[in-house]
Length: 368
Image (cartoon, rainbow, N blue to C red; front, top):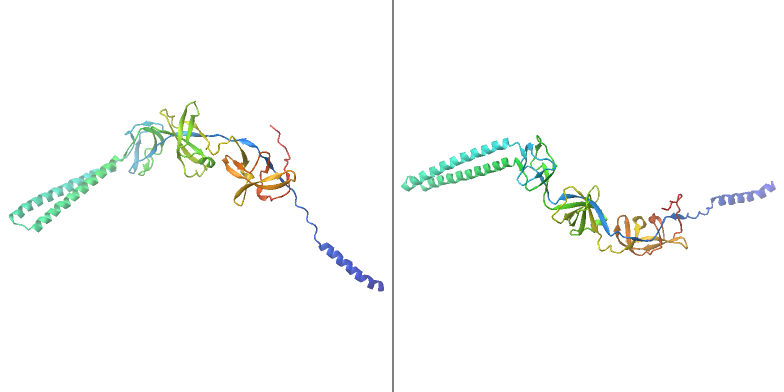
């Protein structure tokens, strides 16, 4: 019993030490060294020109339609037909408009009859006034009737002229020489006033229409001189950017540019051409440093890259000056020199002085 009394405090002490040792924190493992993909800085040649495929269209295109509504009686042209100014293109059923003209002409006859009657009445009362049989007030009343009849006659004549114009509007004529490019209505169809029936490309000046990406839009201002080459022949033309869209196409996200062609010998409508343009003077060096956009990050409103220090296997933040954009690459004007190694991707998860390793692909690509 005495021995148990002596060992009991020792057992309690050992139990406390065991519990405290189990609650102590283990030492945290060091952060793993992140592998980064590096890109060696090299001077790469800059593209001096850009080429875009386009098609030839008329500088002036018109959607032609009737000024009145009705059933299309006949269409006299098809897509691809050449037309002359004043040529009849289509016709509406004008029976209702002809009846309206007859009714308006009848109104003119009735108004003229009323005017002649009021005029004769006024002349008779004028003679009676000279003889003293009627007062001046009665003569003024007859004069007012003549003026009212004259106004009604003029109104009826204007209405008749308007109805005659409406009947003439049932005939659609070409306003200039050109070629029909689109047919939008067929005989028997009821068309509304102003709805397109045909689309016509006017003879004369031609445009080469192209689509340019956003990074090139600023390098293709209105008035810039370019060269246009025919795709199926050796023909070429000089031209200048005549029009540049202010907003991007919602589907392609490109901007439509119209290049006016110079010279009398114009290419055929719809033919395929290549538009070749020299880059802006700001991109004038023979070579430059190009980086993918994934290599750049923003720090305090400035562009920067992570430079790999080979001696210590650490990263250093290096500020750079961006010169411009060419395709999918960013042009670097200052901050980097040939031979440096920069991180190509994942720049937003790295820190200054971080120790990293160089990424090695599991299956190295064979050299070309």
